Structures are given as C-alpha cells and as structure tokens.
Length: 229
View 1 (tube, rainbow, N blue to C red):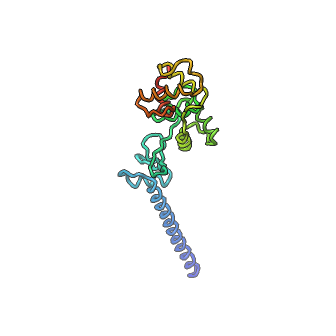
View 2 (view 1 turned 90 degrees about the vertical axis):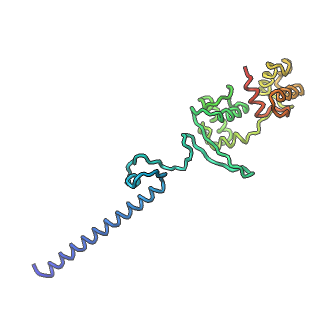
View 3 (view 1 turned 45 degrees about the vertical axis):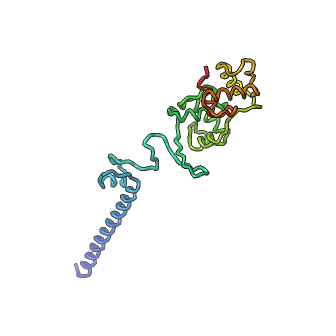
C-alpha cells in the first residue's frame, strides 16, 4: 500500500465522521425546535421537559393539558361576541343530552315559532334536536341539531311576540291558558288577538309583575307556559 492510497482512505474516514456529526447536529436541532413548538401548545403546570419531548416525538405525556383554545372546563364549547354597544356576550353551545336552564330560553323560542310541539324544557332531547335541524334548514344554517353559535345568534335575533291583530294556533293556545286562569272568557279563545285578549294579557302581566304591554312577548310567554295544564 502506497502513501497516496493510505491518505485517500484516511480522507474518506474523516469526511464520513464530519458528515455523521453534521447529520446528528441537524437532527438534534429539529427535535429541539419541535420541543419548543410543542411547548407553545401546553398549559404547563410544573411538568418536566420529558413531557414536552414526548409530544414532539408523538407519545402521549402524562398530566399535560393541551390548550386548544377552549377556556371552559366543561365539555361545552364557549365563544364570545360583542354587541353593537360594545357589550361582550359569552355563548355556550349545547348538544343532545345537555341540560341547562339557558336551554329552556332557546326551546321557548323554537316552541313559539312552531318548530317544537311539546312544552319547552331545559334539556336537548331528540325532539329538540329534530326541531333544531328543521329550524337550521329553514334559516340556511348547517344542520347540526345542536345549539351551536350560529343557531343561538339566529334564535336570539328572533323578535317573537303576539299582539292585537295576530291570529293562529299559538295565539289560541295562549288564549286558552288565559281562559283556564280566569283572565279571559271561553268564547274569546278564537285564535284571533282582539281587544278582549289584549285586556286579558295586560291583567295577567300586572298580576305577574311584568311590563303591561298587552302583547305576549318572551317574558309573558314564559309566564303563561308555566301555567299550561
């Protein structure tokens, strides 16, 4: 073996070592970047770097809370909207099986619009889910069957009330409640909102401490529904 051949082999070994070290350095830097990237996703409560590293390499760490932008501790999703006057309103979304007093307000609107046949409750039942899908379809919303953000905003925007001159099944339903509670005579439950009905509504509102508008608004509907037999 001559010196030239020996030198060539030595050079190859050196290049191999240098290349290997460079490769190791690059791989290490990528892992560190992934570690710091993973750290940005965490709400870290005194867990070690090993947990962060576990995420970087695809393992599930222990005792780590991933922050996906949902600040609510429950299973419900929440979001915020600002009204025209600058007020911040927190919207909580609900799905099948959820129970909350707030749900009753939304089912009351569905009931008043004729999408729900049974009396409003504080739970999303299968019947409520079907009513929601029908409402969403008519409003051009995604038919999720859930009280999601878009559906809630749409429901709240519904200005539901019955007043003198209105007619229909819902008017007659509320007239019957007024009859049952002696605010209106039976012959006036015709389904047409007339002067007698307006006077009966005012009397009912006064008795319940409501604003005496003579109109069956959301608060009056709720009070009347509570008396439904």
